[in-house]
Image: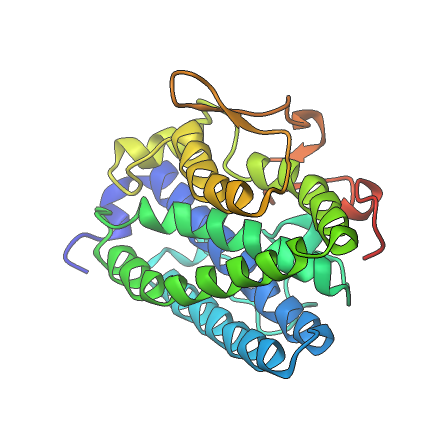
Amino acid sequence: MSETTFELGTDAAAGAANLVVAVADNKFFLAHRLATWGVGAPFLESSVACTAIAQEEAGHARVLYSLLEHFPRELAPVPLEREEDRERKYALSFLREPSTSWIRGVAALTLVDRALTAVLEACRDSSLVELRKRALRILGDEGFHRKYADGRVRELAASQVEAAGLEAELAALLPETLCWFGPAGEPGLELLVGAGVLSQRNEELRQAFLDSLGPVLERTGLRLPVERAAGGAWTYPELPWAEWDSLERRLTAPATTRATTSA
């Protein structure tokens, strides 16, 4: 690295390590869940493609975990190789819950993939050279993932019953996904923006995510409690910050308690 984590200062380096692990752990768990969800895909082609995406997400996690070697050991958690590794995991609660529901899988991929991509897009010009390289490499695969997820959303939305199920799952998972970007003015993220590690703040990332999600909702007629205001910004319901674990970046209440369909 020509620009190393050590030049960030201890607090910013700790924040950068947390950022890397938060993205990597979510990709790790997303890969594991996709491997299960793909088995329940209604068509063989969907199942094969889902398995391929699971492998790519696992590869992305490994690429990001390798970046932890550049951080002081006391700042960087060990990479995950199995789900039971490491007591503290930095992944969304609904990815940590085993599920065989295909509709849950489509909803999770649609939301999580977009959320992770929004953060990686904000790393395109990162002051951390190796993070920038990895982000660009990973983003090269995300177009296929997005196209696949959007295609599955369209398939489910074509059926009144399945569309209702998908809406319920999306609505159940959306609050935690929106929380994942953190509350506005979060000190750790402000440090990263100030150090040039990220180019966008919490609410800017949340808006970028909704900019990506909005068109697929409009095309399919799916309804979620979000809308674009006259000024162009997205509005959304009050988020459950009282349940938010800012360190592990997840809600403490399981997603299944918020979902209205079986997972």
